Length: 436
Image (cartoon, rainbow, N blue to C red; front, side, top):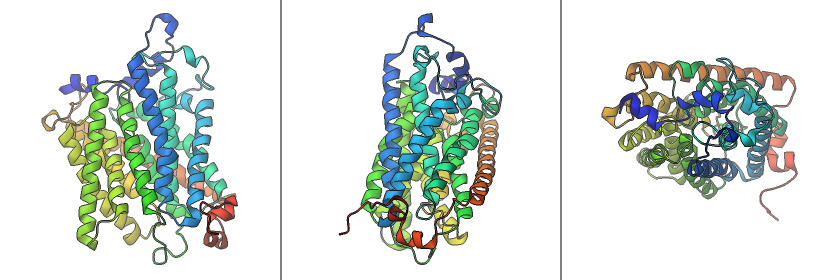
């Protein structure tokens, strides 16, 4: 398809978001018609993405911890969702997507004035775009809590998540999707392999190192208390990911359908590849392994979902499942880092791999949609690795500084007695289960 195919297939998250600055000044009163079909789809996709966090990710993570900590994980997911939503309304959306410099947007849209009357150039009410992008902002810092469950203070989770959103997520979003410097260099990211998964994964690894391992790691840790809960949460993530990737077309069109199809194929291929390796190595296929492989495939296809064909998606999913499987063992067994729920190995590694592989599988010869004008496989790979490196380094540096600050304030880790008792009672005075 070449550059024409790419421009037709990908509207928002690589090239067309360049029009956002102009779109924010358009009004329905000026004669711009609303595309009701695309609006309906983006609203549904927004609900699906929020569903990924509440309850999908909450249950996925909750099943992997000990029973005495499951309520704390659900609290973390719920509280972060609320905190991020308020920040997004006050100034987060404006800094990410308003016209500004190459590094950050302006405060022109702070507190979202006059939002109801504005329609974007593709016929989407800007309010729908604000909502959709907010759900991405919600899930990204929530992913990071999987690096340090069962051992951190609730105050740390709230302060870290708010600070991380402002310091990391908003700038990187502007760099890639808001017309910033990475977008100008040709970096593409259909639905968040760089913006969401690379930033969250690298930050999770740094956080796991700085917070320290759980008592007993790696020899005296209990297995997941409810693999069934984890499987249910993973199923919700899989379904919700259709909105995550398909909604990123910002239209009810062939691009959305192609992205959803690629998402499903990659998830299935990664789940099977992970299960096969596990079956060969330990003699049994596990439920946790199957669904972790599925999530690895979903993370890996995310940046490429709108650019690759069905066979490219299968290949990306299989590669993601295999690489992420070995990455989990490397981080925990070789590096001895207690990234408790494998955020870096699954989301970080998956997002980075997918962001690089798009340079290959977008090739029309391999079923992809082609490249933008002036780009080829080599130049696209350079743009992709620049984006991955910049986002990863920035996320790591900001995470390091933020945790250092919070540690100086004494609000990072709970005491050993609280950790032993579990955070449900120690922090919240409640229990997820009634054991009486």
